[in-house]
Image (cartoon, rainbow, N blue to C red; front, side, top):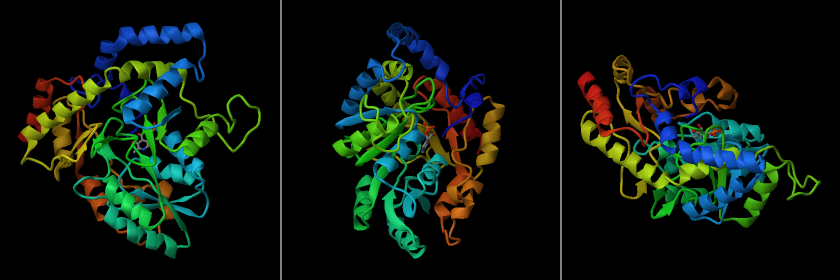
Length: 383
Ligand SMILES: Cc1ncc(COP(=O)(O)O)c(C=O)c1O
């Protein structure tokens, strides 16, 4: 869901896809105060705000460890490095997600294997995992991990996925770039998988004013490994590299901004859910609505509908100055960067159909009811 910087700043249409300006002005005073404090103490790298944020993220999610890192992508890379995933290994990823989900697997030298998604939830279909494991084995790869994606903020069916993963001895690494704040079966994202990776990209439900991310886990050893990896493989202030690492820390200034945003996050999540309910009430029977059930509550990073006439509706909304997004127009197996990884036997019909039909409507805690009605009415009028 990463957008170019130009797109992030695109708030000049009356109802943009994301409106970061309103939230900023709501929180501006507190954020200015927190940034000033960082400038005063001068600990720009791993300053006290990073530790404070990590504590708050861990208790919010209900896990023992949260490690602030440089981005969602780097969180995934560090999680895979901590697990020792590397060349010859297969990592199973959904075919319908942002390209970073597959790119991080390649970055650690392993091979992403694409698994189709479930038409009802848009998340990895656990029933498809067994076939993908057999196909990977046939290609001489060692099945090592599965990386489900909580698409648009809705948690994957973790119980079913964990059962399928256990059958094949796969580690589960949650790509929760879009879903921090969501919950399932009474547990929050972060506590739903052994290791969970979150993004704080500005347009995410909990967004910084730049890049950032976190790794969440209950596993002391994995947490210690990620802490080493994010600072060049060093243990604490030691000089020796204990393992191969990277520059993977969350900036102190971003942590300060995130502390401010976290203080209103629960209220914002509730407002996002209200907006989703308003959209769904207006659009029921008009298009295929995003999944909603009692077992899982989305963080509503995006409100995404399925419409066969998607391009026509999108053009009509653009004419009415309503911003929309196409997440994702291209399934992973159709990206040129991943073409060399294909076996030629990929059968991923749900991902392909979704790519042709999904349309994301404006979403964010500062949308008014009236704006939601304007957008929904514009969709209804076009169909
Ligand atoms: C599903 C998914 N995975 C990974 C990422 C990468 O996160 P970041 O942009 O923070 O590196 C994103 C971000 O857009 C994402 O949507």
